[in-house]
Amino acid sequence: MLVIFHPDATTAEIDAVTERILATGAGAQRVVGAEQTVIGVIDADRDHITSLELDADPGVDRVVPVSSPYKLAHKHRHGDVAHPVEIAGVTFGGVTPTFRLILGPCAVESRDQTLTAARACRDAGADMLRGGAFKPRTSPYAFQGLGVEGLKILAEAREETGLPIVTELTDLRDIDAVTEYADCVQVGARNMQHFPLLTELGRANLPVLLKRGMGASIDDFLLAAEYILTEGNQRVLLCERGIHAKATPARSCLDLAAVTVLKEHTHLPVIVDPSHAAGRRALVEPLALAAAAAGADGLIVECHPDPRNARCDGPQAITLDTLADFAAKVRGVAALVAA
Ligand code: PEP
Ligand code: MN
Image (tube, rainbow, N blue to C red; front, side, top):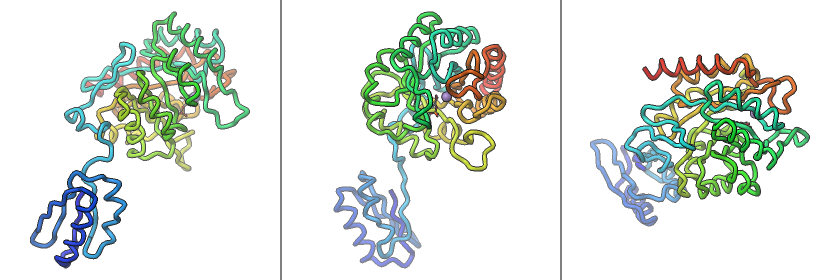
């Protein structure tokens, strides 16, 4: 952190600020310029220094953070380049990423619906199967998922198709069940800042697909990832899925700038969910193509054998007969970007 003084700050004012910094246990390196003095705060407890409100001290012009608040998620951690994450033999991200497709229904509704979808996803070249057994629904009266029965159906789908499965954990009480069946645990947008959940998943030996909260800044998002990383679990995939914006004509506003900004800041793979941003089928493919063009490492997309009778998110589910064409198009764009 740098403390920058006004040109007319007195030596007594600069000394007083120095004392306050040293009292926290941090170092204070003074640089006297022709016009202004600057103190570099070294080895600081960032929150402690922030709580001193040094910018209100006499003589101080402003306080500027230098290092990143997230140490493990930051790109510096891996020599300033993207670092791959491996999930059940499938590698996401890294310096020369293979564009990955996670396909599947929003929710596991029945054995037949899930197995039918899973076969079509496999045939379309999916790398992983998605499906929610525990669903975070806005209304308590909406279908909440099949729970453990849904996990068993997903395991059967994996058995048959060979696709690894990603499924959401919404409640700490279900962590044992979910980690028993999943290859990757999803943390949904609504739980991005459920810190005890993140901490427990940091202790679990399973990759985590962390979705960005609808109102979360990039710092909020990376600090949420940091909760997982700091417990020892380094396998985190970040997922942009659209943020709240009143003026968007879609369900959420897909923030594709976030893909580039995240890749500037972190080594973690970044994927995009066009389905929840879109809210309706017609928007899914254009958003998916745009995400591939923006340099995402992959997509997570909802599909359904019979969207009009789906129990969850039917209007945004793409149909199974369009999957192969969809996959070819997005992979085509990703290949252009990589070329
Ligand atoms: C989902 O992927 O099924 C889901 C609920 O997504 P989100 O948390 O992004 O709303
Ligand atoms: Mn959904």
